[in-house]
Image (cartoon, rainbow, N blue to C red; front, side, top):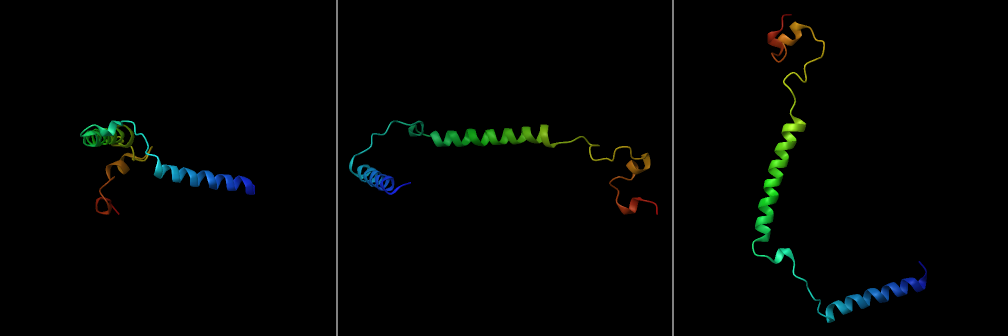
Length: 90
């Protein structure tokens, strides 16, 4: 950016800040001006988070009971699975 462009940019920024303090802005009505908007919004958001996390847990994270069992393992390996060292014959 050349020197003249930088000077124009600074002048426009200073004028913008000065006008912001001198001329009142017209505000349009917003949805959050409704009474209890944030209470209802928070409640609906919390319910959405609960149901979404439940759905994710049920359909994406849970696995079948034998999901982590080794494929093609002999029957006796499946018999001792989860018993620890005390359940195995040495």
